Image (cartoon, rainbow, N blue to C red; front, top):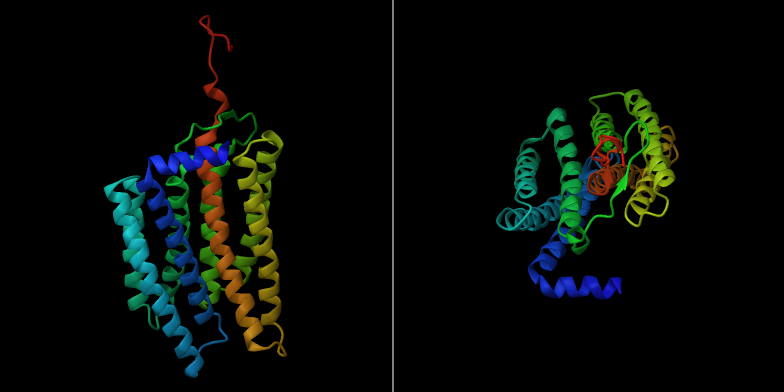
Length: 287
């Protein structure tokens, strides 16, 4: 019945379905752009013909990514949600400008990397907002925990983004590794807390629990890749392709961690009602 309902909604609103597919395509191209960029800046591909080939590949993917994301942003500005469309457009323009002028400037290179990660999170958020499930009634639940899921959901993407910035700074040699390592410990604790809170309070919720499971799975994959990336940097016998693969995968999964944190935050805002909003009886007592 659920599949039939979704199919019926898509037939009744074909433009919404097409916009959703465009958002999915933008997310895929953004992910490919991040992966190819991470390969270029992974440290093992820096000079020679191989470096030039990877750079050309990244530039080609970036052009296609820009076209798809631009289409999505304009479409959302014209249709809905317009605010997210404007944010997508501004981020895309800033990312493209930094990609053109970042040569030999580590600070701009770090900002370019951060905006690429934000762009992926925004395209994933657009896919969530334009999906057919977003138009259905939310499955409201009440938050009884402390700290509240709303506050934890709001701060988690911010902390993940800060950790991504520390990682980009280390990758582009503007920061040491210790801030990134310490930040990783904090992020793991924060993600573990919010995911456990969700699963303990709402173990049967059909949206929140899968989102929490996904975030936790991606985050722990990221930690494993981070350990592997740090290990290969200390090894002198590791082959360059292996080091490049591990380092670029670590950077890419970091972007997926941010996107998953944003999605969980969106779903918490949509489905979780703060405890203080409970209805009151006419005499002022909680009903």
